[in-house]
Length: 578
Image (cartoon, helix red, strand yellow):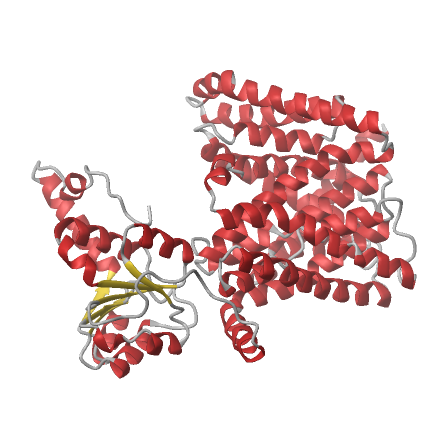
């Protein structure tokens, strides 16, 4: 009888949690805040500490929401491309390997200060370890979302940021593997845990290589079976990990990593993500239900720790990326990108609370610090380029500014360079390839100005003249010596330019080199008209050019002839940006 009575109660709690979370999520979307904060806020509103006590027992929501945690870690594993890490540049590899250990050492100061001041009371047996590790990892959800909205995932700071986030996930796997044994931190139990973990990983990867391809090839014919098979594999490995004395969360992560190299990965992620999002919403609502009313000490500590986290990101990433010759811009922007504390820290701390490793105040402290860093970090990342320019000028005045990239092959523009590409992205890459194919004699007359050291390295390898330059800084064009240019080409649209626009660059070029004819880029007819009115010799409207290409293909195929674009794509294009 009690079981029957409890079912409507659970359904009622779940229903209220989802409705309130959805309403607050819409509000967060309007305010351009992370949805994760809305889910936690829903728990706070519904909980007994600061809310209306609509849900008085978190267990009813937490029991089901734990499924979201399992699926979250499963998809994180799926999205980690181990092969891509091996192919990453030296800056990404070393920054990813070193960032977390160095940051964790610096963050040991946080629990030491809290303990010395007695501000929040005892943190638990492993409170120091959880705080130092947890404050060193950054929020993948918040960071990737902002970089995606800013079109910066494919920039050098974006790639380094993503690489560091992937390595943070790998460090977290090691923490998860050791976490159950922290209660009994003797050598033999720890070795046993790592041995079981290695056995689990080897077994999962072996099955993923020799058995799963056949299973999913069969299941691919029935979409429903594909979803069921993917989730079944996740819970199978998670269950085996739990039975072996490891955490089910580590098992889910291992299941995802094992499947990450299969061709069905993208389809599985797309299908399981919806299921994950539902349960994950409940997980963060359940966290909000546990949040105690913040004391003045807790609020002060959260703001102070968030500021300290930002400071340590700069102290670690700026010298590290400078030493790796990634340049000041990448060093400063990556430091800002990594500020938001990871939601995964909440996951680790919640598990630690369940295992008795930490006191509940640690979870509250990390939650409020995450909220502060996520909200303020969103605004900082959005304005990262403007902040970089201010910091760069400060560095120059203090004599701290470093070289942005290794010495250029050709230096600034000379009389030899009559064609200057201002910025280098997809269109410029295609143009340079076609120029090399059809008019190789003109390659010596080309100079590329860009701020991405990886692009510049590849251009140097191809013996193409290039120079470092941030188009958002007007001084760059003055120092380039553009008065020798006959044609200046801006192929980067305004949505990808940071701190400037095609119209501003056009104005600077016309002032420096009045004789140069400028080709600019617009995305609309109105933008094209404005650039032409400002003196552009020609304007590239990429959607229109694509439409002309599609029209040619449609007419050819309609008449029974091969599509021109298909014929031109037969030969492999060895572009700088592939």
